[in-house]
Amino acid sequence: MSPEEHSVRIEPHGRTLRVTPGQPILQAALSAGLNLPHSCKSGHCGSCRARLLAGAIHYPDGPPLGITAEEVGRGDILLCQARADSDLTVRARLIASVADVEIKTLPCRIARLTPLAPDVMQLWLRLPAVERLRFHPGQYLDVLLENGRRRSFSIASPPHDSEALELHVRRVNGGGFSERLFGAAAGVGSLGTGALLRIEGPIGQFSYREGLGPVLMVAGGTGFAPLKSMLRHMLETGIRRDLHLYWGARHTQDVYEEALVLEWVRRHPQLKFTAVLSEASAAEAAHHRAGWVHEALLADYPDLARFEVYAAGPPAMIEAMRTHFPRHGLSTQRLYFDSFDYAPDARPPPAAA
Ligand SMILES: Cc1cc2nc3c(=O)[nH]c(=O)nc-3n(C[C@H](O)[C@H](O)[C@H](O)COP(=O)(O)OP(=O)(O)OC[C@H]3O[C@@H](n4cnc5c(N)ncnc54)[C@H](O)[C@@H]3O)c2cc1C
Ligand code: FES
Image (cartoon, rainbow, N blue to C red; front, top):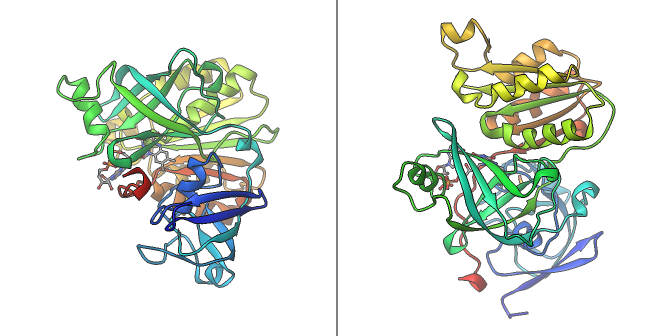
C-alpha cells in the first residue's frame, strides 16, 4: 500500500479495500468487485448510506443532499461521496440478489447503432467470443472513457440473451459520450460501428426480485431500458403476477418502443400498459394520458399497500415517487429504483493518472 492510500474494512463482509487519495469509497468497492448498494453515485438518493465504525472521512464538495443531519449524527456516511482521511471500518448492507455476480472490466465493440427516437440511440455492444457478462435484469454498466471518466447506462437486454448487450442512450447536449455516438450515426463522430470500448459491469442493486404480488413499473424516458430487461426476463420465464407498466415521456415519439410493448400486452393478459405524456399536444392527448406519470399511476392505484414498484429514470421523477408513494401505503422496502443522475466527471485517481 502506498503511503497516501488508506484501507477500508467493509463489515459484515470482512473485505478490506484500498482507496487512493481523492477516490470515492464506493468507487473503490465497485472496482474491487464488491457490489455495495447504490444508485445515483452523486450524493442525492441516499442508497449508499453506511455506518462509519472507525476512522475519519470528508466530503470534497461539502455535505451531500442525500443524508440528513440526524443520520450524520448517528455516524452514517454516503460512500459515493466520502473520501477517507484515515484507515476506516464501515458497516454496509449486502444485497443478496446481486452479490453472486462478478463485476468485470471487458473490451467490447459497437455492433450496431439504431435510432429509436430523435434523441435516443439503441447501442448494441458485442463482447469477445469467449466472454459473457452475467447480470441480473435491471443492472447497469459503466462505459469507461479516456482519463478515468465513465458513463452509466442500464442494460436493456435480458440475461438469457447476452450475446450482444443492448443500451438506450439519450443524447445530452455537449455529452462527452452520447454526442459522439449520435455524430457517428450521422457519419461525423468517432464512435461508430466497429469502435472499441471498455465497459465495467454489471453494477447496481436495481434488479428484479421473484415474487407473487402485483407489480407496478414506472419508466421515465430511457428509464424504459432496465424495465425492458426485466420484462423480457419475465416473459421468457413466464409471468406469474399482475404487472402494469407506466411509461412517462414528453411526446408520443419519446415512447420509442410502444409498438413492442403493445405486442407484449396483446400476448400476455397479465400485462397492462399506460403511456403518460407530460407535454401532450391536443392530438396526442386524444390517444394518450396527459400529465405526470407518477400522478397518473396514483389516480389509478390510490392504495399501493399490496404492490411492489420498480422505477427508473430522471432524478425528479424518482424523487416525486419516493415522496408521494409511501403516503399511499407503499412500503419503502418495496420501492426499487434507479435514479439516472449524472455525476460531474470524476477526476481519475492518482494511481491511474
Ligand atoms: C445507474 C444509472 C443508469 C443510467 N442509465 C441510463 C440509460 O439507460 N440511458 C441514458 O440515456 N442515461 C442513463 N443514465 C444517465 C447517463 O449516465 C448520463 O446522462 C450521462 O452523463 C450521459 O453521458 P454523456 O457523456 O452523453 O454526457 P456528459 O458528458 O456526462 O454530460 C454533459 C453535460 O450534460 C449534463 N447531463 C448529463 N446527463 C444529463 C441528463 N440526463 N440530463 C440533463 N443533463 C445532463 C452533465 O452534467 C454535463 O454538464 C444513467 C445514470 C445512472 C446513474
Ligand atoms: S447518494 Fe450515494 S449512490 Fe446515491
